[in-house]
Length: 290
Ligand SMILES: C[S@@+](CC[C@H](N)C(=O)[O-])C[C@H]1O[C@@H](n2cnc3c(N)ncnc32)[C@H](O)[C@@H]1O
Image 1 (tube, rainbow, N blue to C red):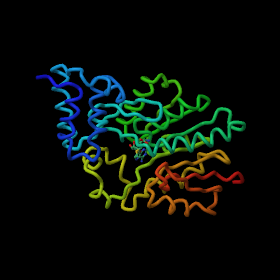
Image 2: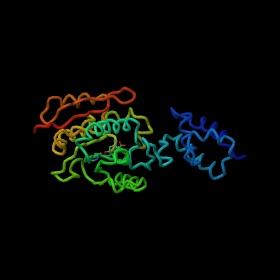
Image 3: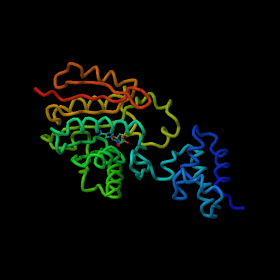
Image 4: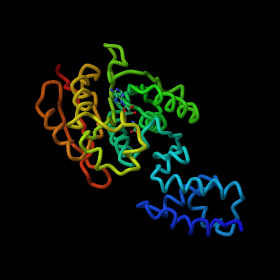
């Protein structure tokens, strides 16, 4: 007998017992499969799944039970107001990174009288989330997005085209600032760089450890190799008073902030919390007098 939406969801909870979030996983998988929203699933309880739908749902549940992230199974991820394509060549966008976009928007609002068309650089763009959200939410911004991974840039460019934002973002391949001309300067440099120490690998959930791209996760023995390189080179690519905004591990963000306090080239160094009240964002301004 073909299952209804309600019975398929009930049996999915058992199949996903190994997940820490079985209900939301099951609802996300089934709503994506049916092309509905999660809220609409309640109204569809009596609807029968077609045979192909039921087969596909069973396959998806088996993949999730084997720890594959929901977003890689469905190929989609939500980020702020956007719905994006994701796949194993890119990190799955995280809620914390929505907060990184928010702190950048806050500065763009405050600086709007001075920065009419702010040049914004997103380093390590992955699926393109940060650049795409900023392009969508700050129409005056002039975006550049880079990544060392050609695969990530393909995904990000395809997302930009699908969202009608391709004309707003310049995508460049390369190692951090090496993707740019030596003289290029920006009002804002934003990045969510890799920030996990290699020694922390075994402590990561299997969903992350076995499925997400290592080059998006790990940053040397300290977890700080990439953040240190970005911080060291950023002053050469920021206008005076320009903003550097980084998302970092809560265990290390104060260490990086401490290295900038009072250092030549930097002023107004601060650490901000994410929505879960964990210190995650480092904000610093390039010195006005240099
Ligand atoms: C933590 S992921 C962030 C992706 C995306 N910005 C997000 O927030 O979902 C880090 C990104 O930096 C890129 N990356 C790693 N090392 C890099 C390097 N040396 N130069 C440029 N990009 C790099 C990775 O390919 C990955 O896409």
